[in-house]
Length: 170
Image 1: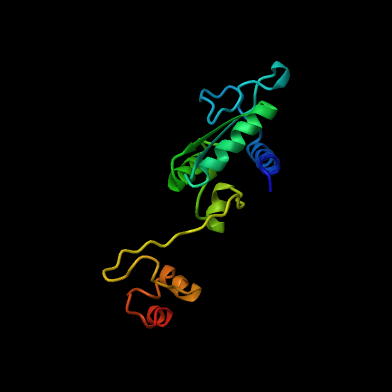
Image 2: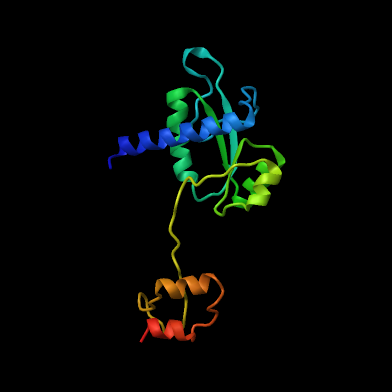
């Protein structure tokens, strides 16, 4: 997929997100005193005041959000300010009502969403790399099956001498 197609897809996704944010928040605040982030424009085409949308949260999606924000702002004159402050900060700010949208690496529970009147949907998926530092284990020699790795993440496997780890590394 070439860069223009990726940018168009990203802009379409941002448009859908922004429409949802504006709809859920009752509209944007064009008089926001915060500065644009990632090159977002401050005036809409034709000299109209720009719609201003503020968000905060996870740092993982920031590079992609930054590109989307720049392109969308350039194309539509919408000012989007996203502060990469971490998932916890984004959750705290959206709950406090100080931003229009928040981003988190982990989803919120249904009761938490309901109690704050929030809606969530996935935006970006990413991978996790497991890095270990074990005496006597050389680089790229440790093998972990999907089942073993899931057991580690779920807290069922807590020691390197667990039979599942031994089975993966005969």
